[in-house]
Amino acid sequence: MTSAESADTPGRPQRPGATGDSAGGGASRPRRRRRRGGRGRSRAQLSAVADQAPEAQTADAPPAPSAPEQKPRNTRTEGGTPKQKRAAGQRGRTRPDQRVRTVRETSAGGLVVAGLDGDGDGLRAALIGRVDRRGRTLWSLPKGHIEEGETAELTAIREIAEETGLTGSVLAPIGKIDYWFAVEGRRVHKTVHHFLLSWESGDLSAEDYEVSEVAWVPLTELSSKLTYSDERKLVAAARTVISDLTADPEELAARVAAAPRSEPSAYERAAAERNAVRNDPPKPRRRRGGRRSRGRRGGGGGSGSGQT
Image 1: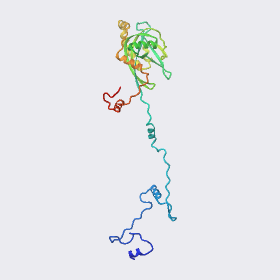
Image 2 (image 1 turned 60 degrees about the horizontal axis):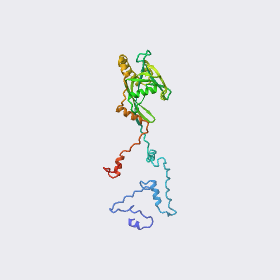
Image 3 (image 1 turned 135 degrees about the vertical axis):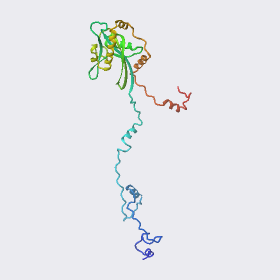
Image 4 (image 1 turned 90 degrees about the vertical axis):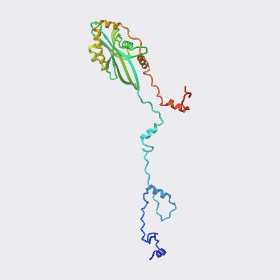
């Protein structure tokens, strides 16, 4: 049977191009059978194609494939990761300034010594005791902040009288100490100037609210009594000065009779100003470029821009 006869013969229809000669006269290649569902289509695409098909179907047509079940949405990652959610929630908030404020304080004090005139009781010095949070007594030298109009020497005389009840005369400086500590959300850098004083009058008294105990301590026992190592070094320097003054009674008498310095220096005036505002709340921080940006918004920011 030829191809023409088979095309006119009723019965089973032939697939075009499946048999017969090609245009070039050679045998045609069989068509590759397509896989069911299309190549590279996912289930979601198949369900979309099924939805676009006409609704009217014959009774013999197979039912359309049902759409695959949707997986429950992951509510944990919906809207971003937890870190992104926190960042989005805090975007409109104003964060408080978490920087720690640094404060500079300047104080003066000293070592008041009795027995320099050879009273027979030996050399002894006055120490103050403060009780810490653990209930321990910490022994140290009396000291306090420099106030307005005071020199460091006048501050040392006043603070020693307030904390120990003793009055003394300044003989010589013995050194200074600076250290850091934290209190009430502040970092404090404190500098203390110490002097050697000769006791003149007064009795030991612990009336100051910051002092829990006051005592005379022999000069030879100060190193073992003092709590802080920096003050123990000051005592070692004071012993050298005491040895020199006791060897020269005239120089000792001249220093005892000399009036303390009363005119504060520029350093002492600045220290008194810092001490006066040490407990004030910090000033609000100024935004960077605020004045410059306001000038641009105001129309140029040149001279005569109307700023007050």
